[in-house]
Image (cartoon, rainbow over all chains, first blue to last red; front, top):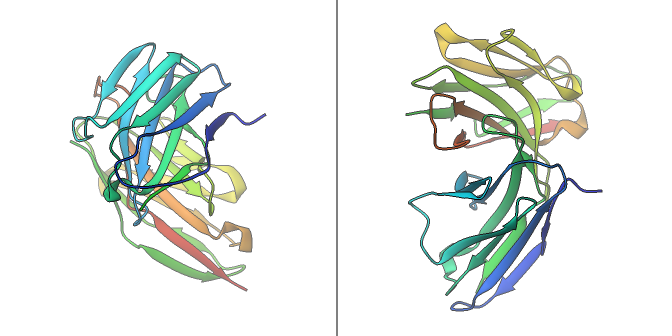
Length: 112
Length: 116
């Protein structure tokens, strides 16, 4: 019974394609996030979603669009994939702001 | 503004010897501080957190960290390293004065290697 699960674990695709990564949490948390971890292990927040309010990081290209059908799910859709999108994407959740995060195991996206 | 600096990108210790992973932070408000561990091909797992209670914080797997406001440091220690401690460690600051959600700032990570 994984707390934060994301699928797929690996995703290999070509430039220009559109892809989605799914995330689900069964912890009853109100807040969910997407993080991007680059090849140097640097982690950067992309989005946070709290009780249906989306907080967008202004440095994220608008090709990235999160979608939350309910508070247990936060999916990430990426349009027109580029080589620089290759990274590991982590979904996370927390009970409230300033609470510790629970992370999924990551999705390794490779764009060729 | 807040920032986190992990002073060592790699640390190598022998099994059974002490571990010290260094972290310095800056924050405009009273921060919350965390250490997370990431094992290969896994998500990050919380080791411990500081949220303005006791300055010496004990975490899982024998790790602890001490919040030193005068030094703006939050170094992670363990008395005796185990092979299973080999992983990437992230120091994280949360600026509780900010209202834009839980905007954490991650350090660049320290890779801990444990030699037999």
